[in-house]
Image: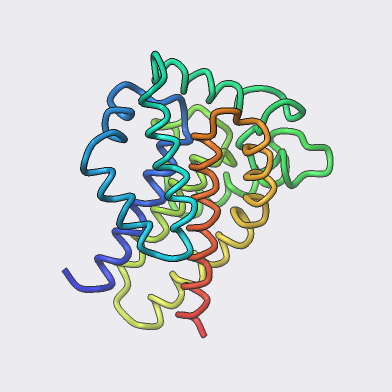
Length: 217
């Protein structure tokens, strides 16, 4: 496996992992994986990157605390509902439109733009999600797909074009609202698991954007 292939696969897997975590309440299987040695090793690997050390350590601590709760999965399901499924005053709805539109409503311009992007790149999300296209999980899934499309490149120029597309998406559809989203999640999440996940997402997205910018210079 060459360096570009490995890098693209790793970046995609991280975005898809975060997408799955934020898409809906964790299942027993997902929670079990979080408690596995494989995931712990994966998180420790991420923590080796200085920009990700603090958010990864917070996530590891929150997972350890979750294991001490009477029914970890049910408690985390309740946390998910409290953090993401209420109104915008008492929770952090995971939709770009809520954070970027003047009225703070669902299905605004960001939703229309995401729908157009999914169509443009022939990415069908209907079988996986029943949410508007600007839901954070769909955006992260889309980013993972954009990254893998880099592997279809047949020239350095094509690779740069894919990198430019990914950088633009990060800047215009993720980093433009993730900071505000992260603060709102932190304020709403009393236990801290989802706050840690979103903090890690923000740090990774910024790191990825910076790396892409360097590659494009």
